Length: 266
Length: 266
Image 1 (cartoon, one colour):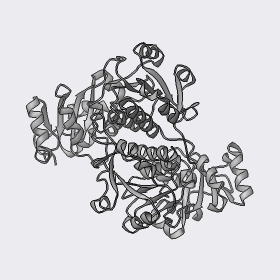
Image 2 (image 1 turned 60 degrees about the horizontal axis):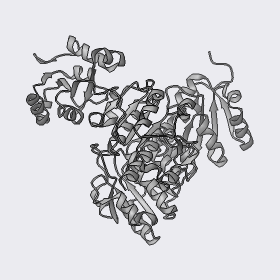
Image 3 (image 1 turned 120 degrees about the vertical axis):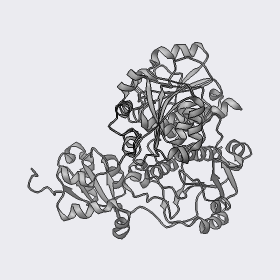
Image 4 (image 1 turned 90 degrees about the vertical axis):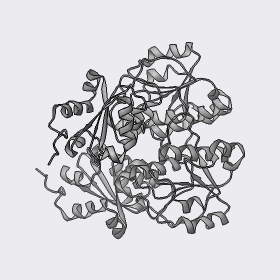
């Protein structure tokens, strides 16, 4: 039984919010869903982002700091029943709190010393992990090509573990147009490619990685398209010392971005 | 309609094979399932591993090399209908071929220069990715604590992308017992810990990483237990240059194992 005053899964507000699980509706509304106490806390620390919070009644006591943050920020805190929170949640076991936020993506600007670019990255978990890893490596920006998954996808948001709020992310960036603009700003373009002709260790040893760099990471199954590979300064292979055929996207990105971060700081 | 001669999902063989999706039955039978043409090919290249192959009729023509490998190895090739292959498959869209194999795990031996140890790693995807990354980094062995996920779990097998057949894997290894044995063999123990008191870059700079090393990676949510952290030579933190709170397990493992691989080769 729903308590009086709790929004239910049948309420118009919940039905509207729930549609933010799809990309087309997110674009139209300019909003997305952020789930779980940790991510909602990060969102509330950027107070201009959060429109409203939906939470089960227990959350206001269990996570008092969240409730207080929302109150201080003047963000509406709406109590909902279990079915409503489940309707808004991506996870199997919802932690009882979901925020509706303004989209975080920003206009592309070719700045910084270290940029991670995802080209046709299709798996939301990989996009989220790429953002998290780029943030950890101190990257100045994440850029995604038009065919990549939306970073506001609920699975991508979850995999980013809050990093979606830390690092500037630009979507729908045409890499052919961006390439020359990055170069004008003094950034080199490096492709991470399992079949690349330059070894990552060689790029560390000869000082290449110390330079301002845009790393391009391709699709999980097909890698980078030939026309993108043709744009870059070097096509760089993470060395495989054992018998694995390749590394997965997130793993290769972590090794490349951290190699650049270390080289740029030395 | 099933063609005559095709095994169906109701056949006793398929029902038996299907039970290998659970750990208890894998242990009892000493067998596990390997799915998809690429993984089945890797398995067949170690011919003593494969007991039998279940495949839709089209697979013998679409992947003729697999059929020939099985024939050469004297492995039984059993044709099945769509429902039967789906019953044996973990993936949503089965690629039509599943092999029943002997378990690949081996007795623990404290050998080598680079070892990846998973302690209470609970996510099958993470265990598989850890094995794949260890293989790529040229690790000599992967060791898993008793509370870790079985590497023969179908999701772990898939995430390993064949590496389960490349690198020796030992399960149910008591890290408290293994610690002193590794030390006797001249291997140092390093914990990967987000709150570690030693910086990874410092370990690279001072030559620590050039030594034979066992890297210990902990649980996704809780990290390494205190009693394991007390065993190690150093508790090592991958530096976070940006605002991410932490790295995910597979990402941190990739950075640590590749840092060791590079240091040991220089």
